[in-house]
Image 1 (cartoon, rainbow, N blue to C red):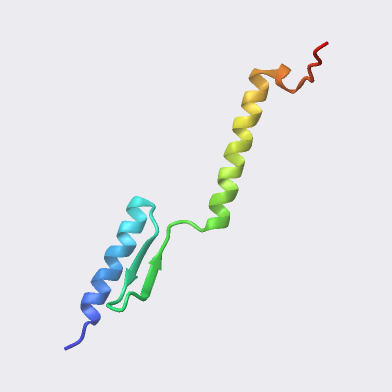
Image 2 (image 1 turned 180 degrees about the vertical axis):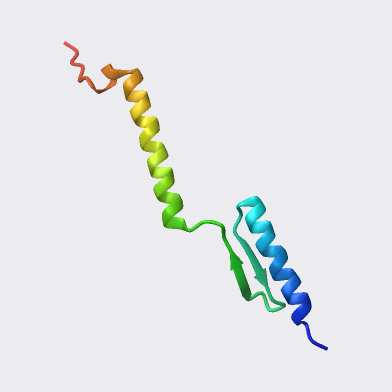
Length: 75
């Protein structure tokens, strides 16, 4: 008796969950060793996208409040 069909069903399910939820999903064996990992993103690409979004937010904020970059001196 082989576990291959059951394993393939679990792998397929993990892949679908990862795609549908955009979550990092791992399949572990009975000894808690990761057998498969599914992620619909790669970390460097995700960090670059977040960095670009943050830059856009900063630029919009500065455009709305241009005096925020003007140094103020109090006497």
